[in-house]
Length: 279
Image (cartoon, rainbow, N blue to C red; front, top):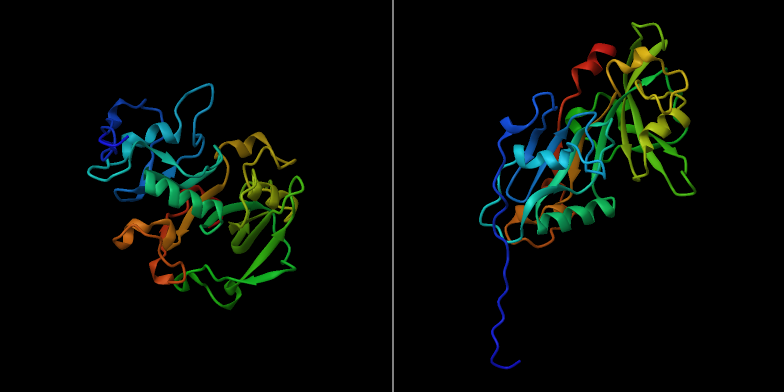
């Protein structure tokens, strides 16, 4: 009504950080691969759920305040950081986390519209056949290319539950299986172009005929000996378009995704267990 005052209250700082020493000693730790006031990219350990369920317990989301710096003096700061996508509990690797409302909105929209590129490393049981369909490797880094053969990616287009499901892949190297249970093991890069449940695990086992090492669910030849080192699947690289991180360019407005120089790429190394099995 005329004469009334309207007050808009906006949070500008997150909650206080928590002391990592208060965590259970046997709980796997998060690693921070990239962080600023608006978001972070952390390395989720295998065996840890991304978010909670009705049973409670420790999740990556619950652990975030112990490892990330607080956001101070930024309008729209979230009380606690929260993931904008998920990784399977058995899958380790890069997890993107929002620390402000702006980041939560822009990052979630980028994931929903498939403008975020994610690269996974996996060790497959066996040797996949040469791909019948190839596409140009537009998302790859020139410095990572190992020759002309690496300029093309194989395409898996195998629907799941009646929905489109597409993955790209390529062989990195292979080696004899020292355990002699799987003949040869093959290290591959995989890029999910859609986001179906267990997509890469199901595509590896079904379309490629080479299940991921340690995958008890989709490998009919899985044995107890394969459980020792867990699942050999890790999210090793995430590439974010400029529109997903508008705060990086000064005014907080959506940036043009056509400028490749403004993309943000975060990478981590393969786990040691990968090179131990496929040297």
